[in-house]
Length: 336
Image 1 (cartoon, rainbow, N blue to C red):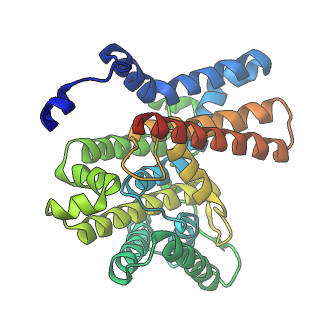
Image 2: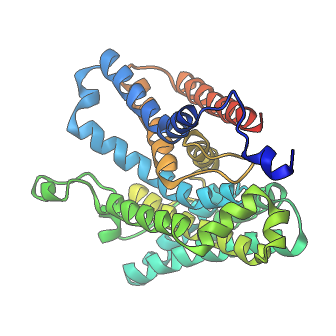
C-alpha cells in the first residue's frame, strides 16, 4: 500500500462526527465553563451577585487583566511567555501620574505612558531575538528591571496626580450615563479585542504567529521571518500592557510603583483557562476574554460568600491547574 493510500485510509476509531463534536467542545469549553461557574455562584450567593451593579463591577474589574491578556495571547500562541507585564503596568501608572503632575495634557500623558509600554515590549522582543535567550529568563529579568525603574522614578512612593477625564475611564457610571451601559475603559477593551481578533485570524501576521508556535523550524523553512514576528509580538504585548497601565491608573487615580504585583500570573492564567496552550500554537481572543471573566466571577462569588482571600487564592489555583490538565489531556488525545 502506498504512503498516500495510508494517509487517506481513516482509522477505525475515528469518526468525522465525533471529531467535529470534539472540535466544537474545545472551542466552546471555556464559554460553557463560564456559564456553569456563574450559575453555580448564582445559586449559592445572595441576590446581589446577579444584580446589574455587580455585573458591571465584574466587567470593570476584568478589564485591566483582559487588556493585558490580549497581548499575552499572541505571545503564548507564538510559543513564548512574558513575565514583565505587571511591572510594565506599574511603570506606566507612574509615568502617567508624573506627566500629569507636571502639567502635561491628559492625552499626551496617556500617549507617554502607553509609549513606555511599547518600548518595554520592544526591548523584551529585541533581547529574546538578538541574544537567543528563552523568553522566560529574559522577561524574568526585565520584570525586576521595570519594577525597579518604577520605584526609582517615583522615589518609592505613590505619585499624586490632578483629576482629569482619565480618572473616569473605569469609574462606575452615574445615573445620567446609563445609556453608555459600561464605562469608556470597557468600550476600549471591546475595541482592542475586535482589532486583536481580526489581526490574529484574518491577517498574514496572525497566520505566522500560529505557525511559529506550532513548529518554529517548519515556519523558518517556509520563509517566515521568525525574529521579526517575535519582535512584533512582544511589542504588541507591551502596547497592551501600556493600555492596561492606563486603566490601572484610572482605577487608582495615582501612580503606584508597587501595584500589579503578580498581575502577570492572572494574565497568563486567563489565556490558559481560555484554551491557550503553553506549548504554543493554540489560543483565541474570545477564549482569553472568557478565561479572564471566569477568574473575576470566581473571586466575586467568593467575596459574596464571605470567603477569606486565602480561600479565593486556592480556588483560583485549582482552576488554573485543572485548565492545564485539560490542555495536556487534549494534546495527548490529538497525538494518538
